[in-house]
Image 1 (spheres, rainbow, N blue to C red):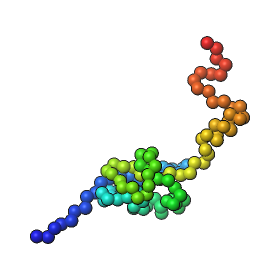
Image 2 (cartoon, helix red, strand yellow; image 1 turned 120 degrees about the vertical axis):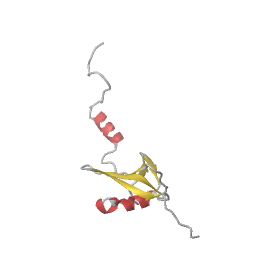
Image 3 (tube, rainbow, N blue to C red; image 1 turned 135 degrees about the horizontal axis):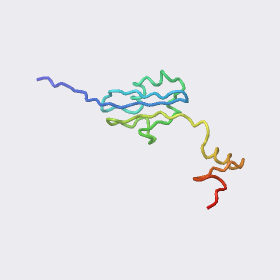
Image 4 (cartoon, one colour; image 1 turned 60 degrees about the vertical axis):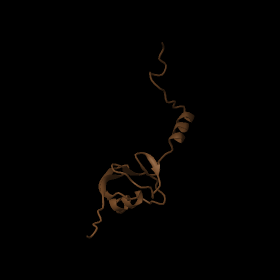
Amino acid sequence: MVAVKTTETFIIEVAYATTEEQVIIPLSVNTSISIQAAIEQSGMLERFAEIDLSKNKVGVFSKVKKLDDPLRAGDRVEIYRELIADPKAVRKQKAAEGKVMRKGGAAGAES
């Protein structure tokens, strides 16, 4: 009797977004696949030359992960870009310019 080796697979997604487009690629992958292998299999590295896995952070459902972390069925691998502007720095700059961000109601409204 010959043992038959079966390879189980599941579906994941690999996502990347630029300022112009968002790409989500569904993949059927082996159960032992790593984040890096899934990104390589997706073709994202060929499609977007600016992706550098030694610099870009990656994650699953908004949680930063390591390239060698394993995936589970239904995971969405996300490749993160560098921020164009630091949100904290933008708020500080607006405050320094006197452009106060207000919560609720109009400025100068009386009760």
